[in-house]
Image (cartoon, rainbow, N blue to C red):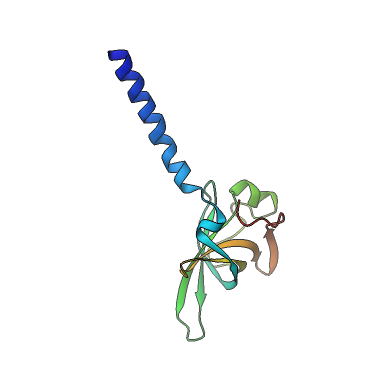
Length: 132
């Protein structure tokens, strides 16, 4: 009986350990609208080098001077660094331009397809796929 209980507990722990990873990775179409291309321009306010997708945040001023922070989902840190966007290459406050697709819910969240840092293209989703 103790062996069955131990196996059940181990199975439960393994299942719970994978739930977070499964929830974190989603399809492009589930969250973003491929018919809503968008370009934002602003300054970097935060960078998160996380898997399966990195996130960076851009403070964007509108015509009235009001600032909105956009969350930009990027490729994995490995994919970004292969194309030149390496950890430490960008500093908070650096100017960026990001092309991508807006979230379906209209929030200030987007999936990044091209990233320009200080006027230089440093990342481009080359395969044309909608998501990763």
